[in-house]
Amino acid sequence: MNKIILDPCCGGKMFWFDKQNPHVLFCDNREVSTVANDGRNFEVAPDIVCDFQNLPFPDKQFVHVVFDPPQMLYAGRGGQMALHYTVLPKEWQSVIKAGFDECWRVLADNGTLIFKWSEHDIPLKKVLDVIGREPLYGHKSGKRSMTHWLAFVKTDGSSSVRKTQI
Image 1 (cartoon, rainbow, N blue to C red):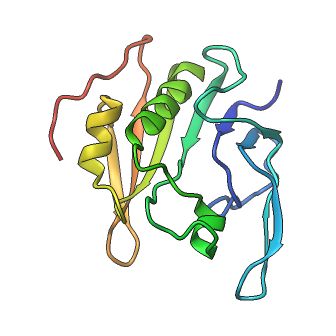
Image 2 (tube, rainbow, N blue to C red):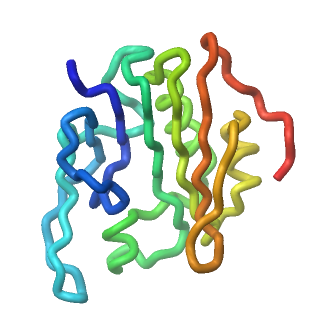
């Protein structure tokens, strides 16, 4: 298999420069093809439809995982934000923990996991407490620096247990 990179929540592939990259396996739990309120076409077209909380892949299959899960609690169930990003349930903790654990499971030893999180509704500190793992480094971005890009490295099968506070 030449798919060495996994994006388990690809959505509209909005941050990908090459939305057809042959090394990336794009997954999502839905397929969507519609016209957004602004008149642009919006499409969620994963290679595989699956739930990021229960990935259908063997352990340690991917050398790189990009985990950009749903991050909003309040987006209006039928609105454009919900369409583009989907909405977490009120009890979001188990969803995010299960998703991160699954991404970690399919990540190869010495592989990297990039985690994207927007603090629009839930602070990053709470998310890191839930996932219980320590990022190697990270970067804030966006107009208000509310979006965090974090890098995790899976060394010798360890879980990088969380030690520091943000």
